[in-house]
Image (cartoon, helix red, strand yellow):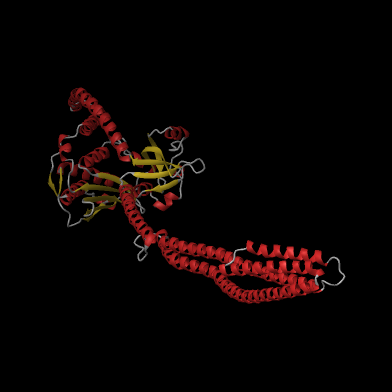
Length: 614
C-alpha cells in the first residue's frame, strides 16, 4: 500500500508538473506569436509610413499642376503620418528603437515643415525650387531611413519568426512526449500495482483456501509491508483457530466419551413438529439395550421402540418438556427380538443451532422390577411363613394326637380288616399332612445356611447314588429302569456353599426327573466350569414326557404341581436355596423330548453375610 501511494504521488506530481509546463508553454508560445504579430504590424505600419511619404513626395512633384485639392491632401497626409509616428511610441521598445523613433519623428517633422514651406513659396519660383530641393533631400533621407528600418524590421521579424517556430516545434515535441508519457505512466503504474499486489494477494488467497480446507498448519511467509502485517494477522488467526478447534475437539471427545461410555441409554430425539420422535443420535448402551445397532436406531423413531400405550412422546409429556420441565417417567420398550422390558426415562428439551431436540436418558429397570417383586414376594412369604408357623404349631399337636389315637385304634384286634385298611390310609394321609407342614415351614423359614468349601461334583454324585438306590427296579420293573449318565468336569473348582442345601436341591431335581420317566429312560448329569463368568453350570436332563409350555412359567411357583400327590413346594424351595447361593435356575424343553434344568452357581459368594442371616 505504501508503494502504491508513493507511485501514485509520483505520477500525480509528474502530471501536475506536466500540466504546469503545458500552461506555461502555451503562455510562452502565445506571447511569441503575439510578438511576431506585433512585428508584422510594425512592418506594416512602417511600410504604410513609407507609402505615405512617397505619396507626399509624389504630390510635391505635382505641385505646379492644376490640382486644387493637392495641398489639402498633403496636409492631411502629413498630419496622419505624424499621428502614426506618434502612435509608435505607445508600444514598448528598447532604448535603441526608441532613439530611432525619436530620430524618425524629428526628421519627419523637418520634412513636414519643408513640404509646407514648398507649398507656401509657390509665388517665388526661385525660392520654390530651392525649397523643393531641400524638401526632396529631406524626403529622400527619410525614405532611406524608413526603408532601412523596414529592412531591419523584416530581418528581425524573420529571425524572430524562425526562432519562435523553432521553440514552438521544441515545445510541440515536448507536448507529444508528455502526452505519450501519460499512458506510459499509467501502464507503469498498473504494472507496478499488479506486480506489487498480485503475488501477495495470490499468496493470501492460497492461504485462505488452505484454511478453508482445514489445513491450519499452513503459514504465510515472505511478504512485506502491509501484506506482511496482513499475513501475520492471518497466521495469528490460524493459530488461534487451531487452538479453538483443538479445544472444541477435546470438548467433543470428552462429551462423546461420556456419551458413548455411559452405562444408561442416551438418545437425542427430534423435537420439531414435522419429524417429532425421530432418533437423531444414540449411544452404544441404547443399541445394546434394544438389540439394534446405532445406525439402525438412527433410522428409526422412538415410537418404533415404545409399547402401545406407553408412548414416550405423548402430548402430555411433550407439553411438559416444552415448558422446560425435566420429566421422569416409566414406560415399556420392545427390543429387536420382540421382548418387552420396563424402562425409566428422564427427558428434557434443548435447542441447538435453531433446532429443538429431546434428550432422553433411559435405564432398564427389569432387575429393579424383579427386585421389587422379589421383595414383595419375600414380604408375602414372610407373612405366609408367620401364618404357616402359627398354623403349623396349632395343627401339629392336635394332628399328632389324632395320629396316635388312630394308630391305637388300628391295632385293635376286633376291627375288621376292611376298617383297619381305612384307618391305615388315614394314618398315611396324616403323615402326608405332616410332610406338607414340614416343607411349608422349610419354605417359609428355611434353616440357616452353613457355608463350607464344597465340591459340586461330589455332592451331585452322592445325590445320584441315593436316587439310584431308591429306584433299584425289581425283575418285573427291569424294562422301566432309569439309566444315569454322568459328564462331570474334572477341573471343576470348589465353591463356598452349604453342602446339605445343595444335596437337597440336586435330590429334588433328580427325583422329579425320575418321576417324569415312569416308563424308564436316561438321566443326564453334566457339570462345567465357565472361567470367563467365574461360575459353575450344572445340567439335569431327562428323556421323559417333558413339561407343558402353558405351565412352564408357573413351574417354580409355590404350591404348583403336576403330580397327583405333590406338595408344589419342592421346586420353589430349590429355586429359593439356589438364589440364596447367588445363583439362578432355569428349565428348557429338549428337542428330542424331556426337559433340562440348568443351574448356575457363582464360584465366589458376594453376599455371604446376607445368606448367613437367613
